[in-house]
Image 1 (cartoon, rainbow over the protein chains, first blue to last red):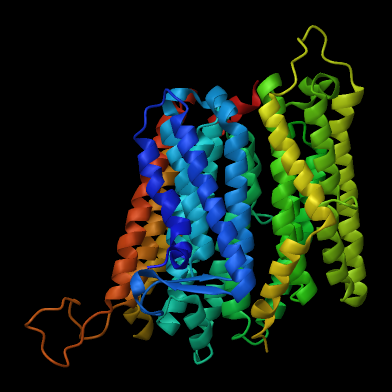
Image 2 (image 1 turned 120 degrees about the vertical axis):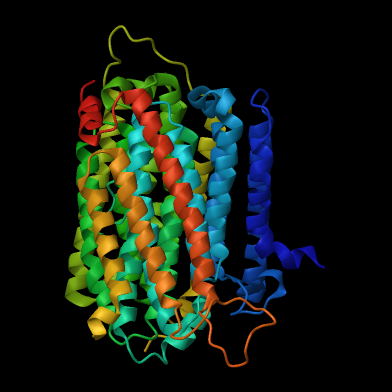
Amino acid sequence: MNLLEQLPALQVVVPLLMAPLVAMLSGRGALPWLLTTLTSAASFVIAVLLTQQVLADGPLFYEMGGWSVPFGIGLAIGPFATLMLLVVTGASTLALLWGGASMDHEVGRSHLPLLYSSWLMALAGLLGIVVSGDAFNIFVFMEISSLASYVLVAAGPDRRALTATFKYLITGTVGATFYLIGVGYIYMMTGTLNLADMAARLGEVSELAPVLIATGFILVGLGLKAALFPMHAWMPNAYTFAPSAVAVFLAACSTKVALFVLIRFDFVVFQPNLAGHGLMFTSFLLPLCVAAFLVGSVIAVFESDLKRLLGYSSVAQIGYILLGASLLSAAGTTAAMLHMFNHALIKAALFMAAGALFLRYGSMRLSDLAGAGRAMPWTMAGFALAGLSLIGVPLTVGFISKWYLILAALEHGVGGAVLVGLILLSSLLAVIYIWKVIEVAYFREAVEGATVPAEAPVWMLSLLWLVVLGNFWFGIDPSLPLSLAGMEVPALLGGRP
Amino acid sequence: MQILGLYNYWIFILLLAIGLYAVIVKSNYIKRMIGLAIFQAAVFLLFITMDKVEGGTAPIFTKYMVPGQLYANPLPQVLILTAIVVGISVTALGLAIAIRIKEEYGCVEEHETQRMDREP
């Protein structure tokens, strides 16, 4: 048995097996954190190895327990999936490395082993969603990751974390259940749960009404999970009150995994089989996406809490990602995939900077952060650079995403030109809300009588700057995400009528 | 009779609507969890209904099986076994959070916790 051939399964199994082990450790030493970080790093290494395999040999297929697909459970890892694996494992590892100290500070040591155990469950669940090629398996992994994320968010230091988690739990469960109903309807018509088999058999189905109902349930269910406007109400508060390290992890990847399922399900299963479904997909999602980035940005402009501001900015960014997908073109889907990768880099950096500010100031209200630019120059400089990337300044990853998105929009004539205008308007709003933070931090006098805090720990700073450098590295040389996206595009668009 | 004969599906829709109504409208966290449980139970019913084969028995493989005997599709039953476990976990976690909310806020009503959050 060659271990390299088992990597698709190990990607999920390693964190899943380590989770109960970590839960049994004592909370006193740094051991739970160390073990979790090592496990997460091992997952990252597996993701890198898988990416190399996929880049060299194309998509990987794996049969769990040797049972042949579609009777057994199949794992399918395409280029898009490896991109997501890199994002998820990378975000988890960086957030753990960055946040060990802040977790001690915000959560209290006695609960840490259980919390890190939940972290590994969330990681395993997210990775499971990405590698799985089976619709029901995706549901189960979705619930594993969601249940673990609820625990992580509820561990936040403020009591409002609890009400935020409750909202997250209700919305998340309704979303997952909608998805399950949709899968049930498709199973009724096709008798299969394997996505590839589903795509093949759906063509033979003559009674399409249940399938149309299924598309609705699946789109709305995954939209709830992905915090697509107007189903985003749970998200800003969940990110705001979660422990800082959890916010870095979840903001970078959890909603994107739901988007990944949404895009894959729709492009692979529905669009080749339902005449006119592409048009329905576009006309349903495109207005929501435009509303998402306009409304999200406007609310962010008026928000006075830094983490909530970033949360609403995420609502807008999800709009950009799905906008690319809903254009149904090669350029559009490329833009969507690129922005999933790029936005993870941007938001990880911004939440790291926000978390460092929270560690020193103990508050996220903008008025309390006055003068932070002088008290914590390195942190704020990192924030400012990541903010430039969010706005989409050349040489940053944000620019690459916007560039491809605008190219994709311009393929659509006058309507496309209007879209470009709206994208630019939303970018302008991003300039305003990032500037609002910069203005408070650099140009306003510190609150009188308040003690001026010290700069963030060197360890946190170095990780923040590592991610900021990543923003520029992949902004100057986006060949890795581009080549993965380029490999995936024919698979996503290939079978369309 | 076609419409009445599909009564399982009607109950599914009814339960789904009742559950979703409670989740959206109710302010009490416990009642919302009850709504969520009803909502999930509706989906269990949907899956259990679709596996029924007319004239089929339980899908248990024994030496008494008659050749040609019809039996219900076991797969959705297994799926729902898993979904029930997921549902129980969600309910348990939701109630645990409701208890923590009661400890921290002294109530389990959403409009009151929201009011307390607004007051600094």
